[in-house]
Length: 198
Image (cartoon, rainbow, N blue to C red; front, side):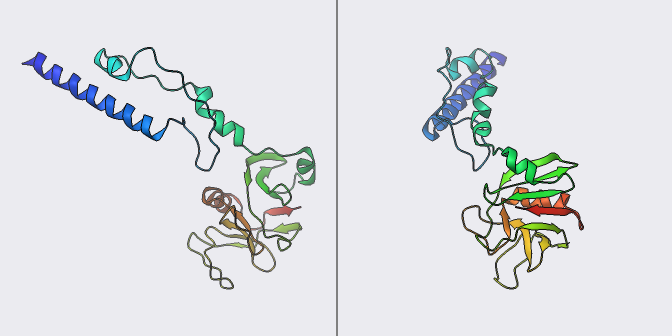
């Protein structure tokens, strides 16, 4: 009785392994990556033992090497130019480089978050040194443009803010961030913090 139950469990595991292999093969293995990042064309080499054989013998399925899992992430991470670093004074808590379309948070000149990609408003996003004036929540709507401005952190006259928005459609003057970065800025940029836009 015990042996029969073990055989059934092994058979079910083999069927499950076949389904997993079929689904990942049909979907195309691309490794682990962050949403919105480019995928490298690296695919792991074929395994010496099939997934069915590994499960049947009790051997675990190998995970792809760390180099493969993180290749796409590392390749797409934004990098600051030396000029951008010099343009951001150590006293600033947030900096935005309009030409490179990058922004980051820092403390005493040491980067604490980012750089992350952003989308400003061409010729509308002001340059200069500002201070965070006030913050709005996750469901804030623009009264002027009637568009959502989730996690808005207002820092310049005219309602200019960091907030969640499209990274492909220019803003009306604000600085769009992906929603995760917008929430991070909302949580870590206090009222009064210095913001430098150049």
